[in-house]
Image 1 (cartoon, rainbow, N blue to C red):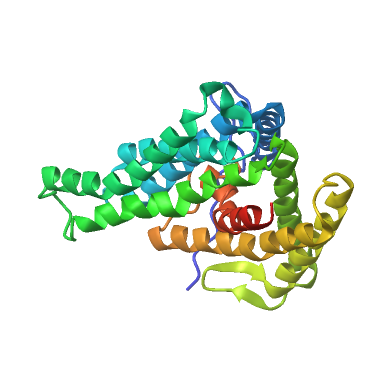
Image 2: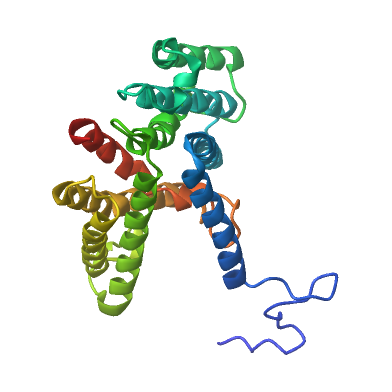
Length: 316
């Protein structure tokens, strides 16, 4: 027996006015406004110089790690979030200084003197060596925890996983940003953003138009093989077109970088989708209304950057 339709008196309005009598902002308006604000902050910090780039993305990766730890907390884990985020900032800063100092001109951070390269390297190594011990000592101090029926070493593993999954890949953005002989080059970061955006746009357009075969239906039902091919082709076109701007990069290098973005970007997105489904959340955060969290916005980078960093170190 079907239920009767709700009467007009009980039907909720689509956009009820707020306390001031105004209707709330639509989702589309939120996406546009906060998308523009985010793009201005992102591109402005990248363009202005090495310092603004480093500060902006250090904050971004710290917030991404915070979102990861918060999702793990929803699953019942209790990672050392404050300690993990503090270590992530040290890792980002150390890799930034090391990446700059490895250049022949000592990079943008030579103002500190030549010894800062050695200091940053030692700090990074020290963090890696001591972090597991510190995390285990934290669990020993808090043992036994209430309402936690699994090993305390699971919390240690989650804390370390966040650094390996989020912070280390995002810190490798420094390797991409600095080129041999010229130091910080904002064009490389902008080019990476353009490639990622082309991968998303191409996949969306091709998937909407031709999509029939699901790519990973259990993880992300909306993604299709046709969309993946469309994103791959549009990204390759952008890789070729960047030659008019990045004249110092060969066509082969640009196409390999574009292919890396087109292949590993969707994998990074699928990995984060799997993470969200496993803990039962829709968005990683709400820092950008209409866009979700920063982990939602930069999830592709987590798989792209390690590969691009290797290419940068090998071929410059």
